[in-house]
Image (tube, rainbow, N blue to C red; front, side, top):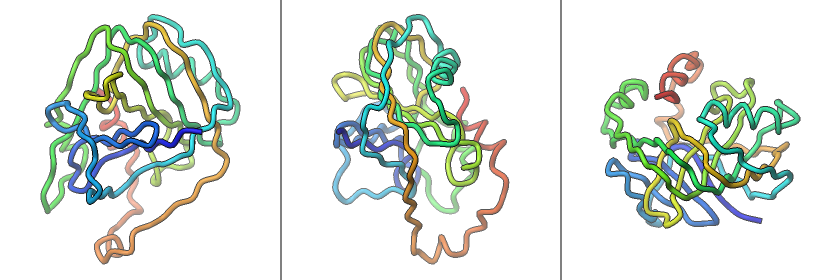
Length: 206
């Protein structure tokens, strides 16, 4: 059993969160994965105890869309959550991080226009991701969402594109979720009923 957390960020949208085997990292605008300090907080995260229910060989020469199509053929219940751990060598990896923000906070779709994008070739590391069902729209990002951490755990970020080389796919099917909501006055006054589908699609893509 392996503990890891993924998604999405830290308070003030300060970089990307990546965690693997119980260790947590903050990928900032310089692309460096810094160990997370105990006092740091996050407004949103997805956490799981990872158990391998299914595994498969990672095919070579898949781009990000091709990888998702491969995963589509492996998952059996699209109304369940799935967690993925994909260690391997990647011929290309394109990741991003986002800058810290101060109040008043701008929409995420505006912030990502200032994102820092990093390109790596022939890199070894681990893709960590989740699949969320479509009915979770508004509570999570529907579909696939992946972050990357290199083998030395010094670089990483939110995945925008890739090309596979070799590796394996490990899958954990999740049929039970527990959600904790904030108790802050700010959260109590937020308007959360807006349709964010279009905005999320813009944020997830290159």
